[in-house]
Image 1 (tube, rainbow, N blue to C red):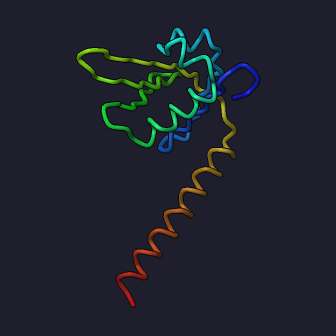
Image 2 (tube, rainbow, N blue to C red; image 1 turned 45 degrees about the horizontal axis):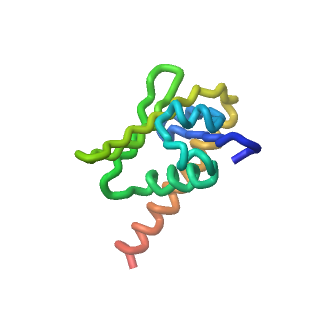
Length: 122
């Protein structure tokens, strides 16, 4: 949360593309958040984090479409279904930033492989 906006940044782990948007309270209304939900941006942020880690009855999806990504939070409920869709725009990134991310991923993978190997070979 920066000022009176919810600043959302999304990194595609495969392509290393970044998507961004700063949402005002009005923007959140257009995305599908209720008046009560959007009245506290920190609550919206916590809600998105909770949904990202998995929550029963809710579906968390990220759809990439051209130069944009759409974050969708859906609750399938016969009585009160909820659909929240937040659109983010692709950011330009320096090639060196993308390479740094790829190197970090490779280092992480090496650590995991070493852990697996240590379990197999005493």
